[in-house]
Image (cartoon, rainbow, N blue to C red):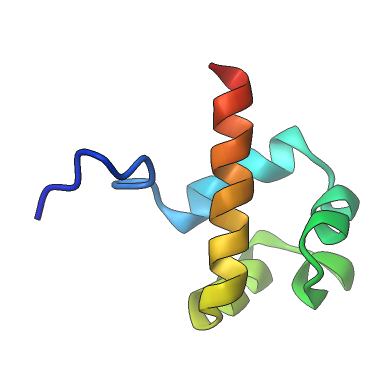
Amino acid sequence: MEQPNNPLHGVKLATILEELTKAYSWEYLANQININCFKSNPSIKSSLKFLRRTPWAREKVEQLYLHLKSKES
């Protein structure tokens, strides 16, 4: 199914996390989104595991990513 109006269509969660960690520190991410996987021994792998199971947290990460992308354009 095509989703031409969805800016996240085709963007993997791993890519989102990689770009966010390049642009911001883990500490900044933990301050913006209060989740333990960003606070305690943060890693892409542990964050992916948590975010795939937790829709509300994933939504917040996606919103932060969209905000980052809007600042880049």
